[in-house]
Image (cartoon, rainbow over all chains, first blue to last red; front, side, top):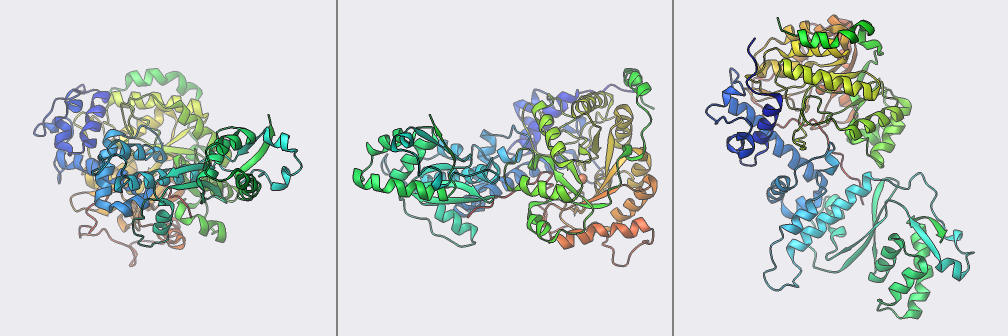
Length: 294
Length: 328
Ligand SMILES: [Fe+2]
């Protein structure tokens, strides 16, 4: 019995780099990563991969190579349906292939596959053509990607479906002082987002099968959560966003209000009147699981 | 014919304490089941169809805190569940992922998994995952490596692993044995169970120019715990395991042979692309009953292997399935 010429580890590293190369199997075989394991050329590759009656070794390897990018770009398309709509499949796939090069999967689960896609789009964003402060098309795409990734994580992450939710009546008896010194504990699926475009409306329209136009830039503040296992989003004012953001990050209610009062363009009387109403609505929307005195 | 002396000596102590395998490793014959896919969640919850059992893709549920997990737990209350993974990477030279094994074990306890299966393959190396079921060169080194890892996994999970023959598209110059020999030795050395994917045997037999019937006659039948059935795509020079359609007649004929040889084991239909409505899926696996009853020779309604190349020349095998988000 002849000894194998190559170790299992050599063969796996060689083959993996051969089939994941974005320029195809020939380029993969010639890549330093494959060459450092087994220095064969496309002409001598039969020393590693045998041919079949119908296909050459390169043609056989090509099946894996084609499948690698096709399968993973398809998964990214499923994770970012509105972004696919905005870019068109072809352009989306170009971004996806670049992304998979820079952030290849290192996880056992496909739900991690697209986690850095918004970051990748931000990193590769072309400079604004007009001025530094210009908000344009690339920002729309980045915001859309941020929204869709949040939808994914909220959809399959921890939720509040089987938990008690804080009711408005749970805190009406608290004294103003006790109220100010308490923390509202938000449900684990609640997130707030600050975006430059109303991408939530665009994404919902795509989900409904419509052909939405690209919206104009418009500062957008969202609360995104999950109720009955479906991702829900509600728009917030800037002041509401700031307040909820403080609360989610662990500020006491008093500290959160104080911080917001210093930034808001609302009159303080108006803010004070609104707060009671906001907390009631947010409780009804299931944003909080409990209130805890500090 | 092989020099397996080292392996045999290594495992001799194990062999003396582990009794001969009962048929199906003592697992029940669950009947005719289908792979659980998110497209069918609502139908299953609403109609409680009369299907014998479900197989799940383990990775789609082990981290889920959302609807997939919620639906699974309801289904597990009513139907037997088998866990089928795609990321164990038992043949890889990368270290085993213990966190992953812990999650497999935890999920198995929650859904009362009847057994846990994965594939005789590797999915990545150097810390990367290609999310594909890549073939192992079949020789003594890789056999010993795989055997060692199966033993570790079985110890960790505290239950036998069930391993499936994958469909494949390349073979290696460094292979010194046939796949059925590798799988037989692997099962003998570890006492693992086998998931015989009859369609994969057929696909690989065409791709690698071997006799599918000989393959099925050559594996240890008493270790087969489960069968897989699926459709594939004919690309004329080769077949691709796309799981996107009906089971073709030559695969049903192999199924009948496998049924006879094993005495019958739990049978599951996989359908992962162009997924039809649930009743169509269910009806497809119920066709197996005719082969089990022995009444079926060549059925006039049987689907032959297509001689035409598939219009879908971009056929992509999809071992893992992405679960789409439900949002407003
Ligand atoms: Fe299978």
